[in-house]
Image (cartoon, rainbow, N blue to C red; front, side, top):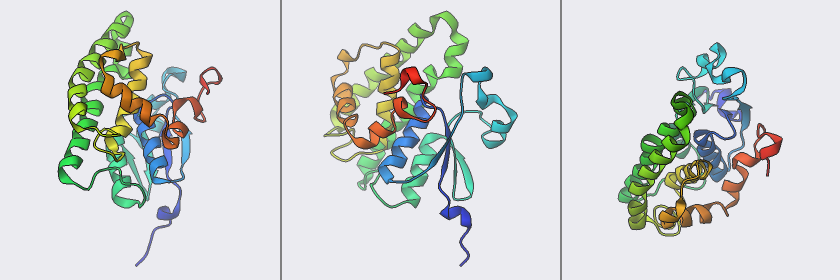
Length: 220
């Protein structure tokens, strides 16, 4: 059987240091122990490097992240994470138990589809002066739904006592909540889980404060 050389090349992550979707993928790479290269895509500079024709050829949605891996290009963070889960050994990113696996996917989708897109850069740029209140409203609304779910599913982590894709999605979203000054005291389960996860090395090395494109004033 012929094996493509692309399968032996390190994956390449095209992302932005503070993009929560890019951060999810960095966490997944770290949890799986996968070495990878990064190509920064500055979402602010020159009006947004993701809007260039060159990047559009890589990802027609003109969003980050995009990952070159195994001879293909993938976008959408959850699709990338699940591809890693299905093709790479190491720590599981989804539970074995079907019910817990469904819960991990549910929590991930609540964050990735129901909360994060409403305070994404391309959205709040259209909102203008009300962007802080807008972001606070939709993050709070999402957390009000997420908190009781996590009270039911969580152990040490979001779903039981094993890290999953749900945890990968939670931490970047809490980071965004803090950026937009959301009162987290109303969400003790979310707050506890986030604090626990941020102590793990895989979450530390993937943090926005220590990426190749992190501005000096935001570096850890």
